[in-house]
Image 1 (cartoon, rainbow, N blue to C red):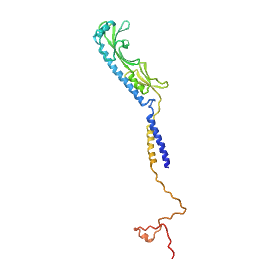
Image 2: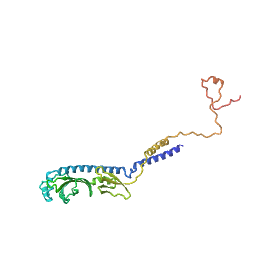
Image 3: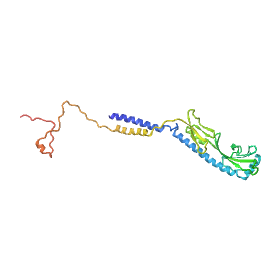
Image 4: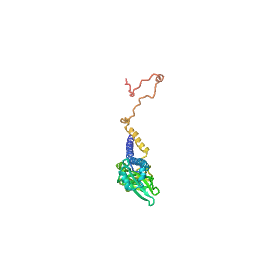
Length: 299
């Protein structure tokens, strides 16, 4: 019986340890580890935060600059005149680091878009043909947030429509790096364009994580069906079963004394009969009789 408890305890210990190891090393739902899931959540939050902050910055700058008298007068001139005004300081703007400013106009008769100025010189052009609004897009390996504001011409407003665009390009590398380090593959999608993150496995199931800051933006990562998690009661039961089994195993059993069997039955040490005198003296314990009976010698 004791041996059976020992065997059962050993089995319970093995099963309990296996259950604990499985629970600690298994992958989370979707085939992703906890570290990968954390990296994905961090990337989504970082993208949302960057887009929200950049959108606020470009909106404020575009709203303030588009109402300046010098800007309203500049859209009535031409690109050469605007360049001279920039050189002489009439259109010298102090921009926050990383911002790009574009000034232009649309000829209403022909819908032709004319570019008048880009600061800093040689920067990317993302004025969206002067269409007023807020934009978030992918340009190469950068995330570009743009605000296009209307500029009311100082004159000829019936012929021209001025616009001023302020953009902030953001590098995707700081957001993508933790994903790559965690072994996450996928892509960033915005407005039909995408930027890859590692190499997406051919048999992977894409899992989309939409961004709250932009309706057409999402982070897509490679997922898989994954392994089912072991139910908690099984894990706890496996460990719990090992504990009493081990205690039973470690409890010493009381040995039985077994002597050699004798063919002659042993005489009883107690007398089954009492004398009348002994029955009258119940309060006085009788002297124990010897178990060995001897016969008196003959005289």
